[in-house]
Length: 144
Image (tube, rainbow, N blue to C red; front, side, top):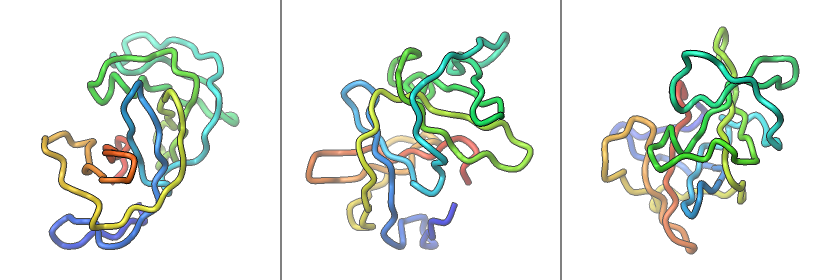
């Protein structure tokens, strides 16, 4: 990730994020991790996969895991969501895409607007205060 963190883990500089919706809630991820936003295509189910994995789809010639993002984050389930946020795959890693209901916008986050998450989830980076309310900032799995 290209984001620079202060020694205490706080955000040290303004950062662009992609905001998206899961049901009535808003979330964001650092924009540098996003490869593309696409409409969902058909997927093949995968036996013995974790409960949050909906299946796999072909994305530009690569097998890409589809993740029920709401299930992954523990806020319900929406395996039929219509949009996919595709993330950069690390070398020798499987590419994956998060199913989301809507993609809202790209926005700049100011360090003063980010509060620590009030819970200890490894995917939750913090809570962002915006003019439109709170946005939960999450990190894709494997995004260190």
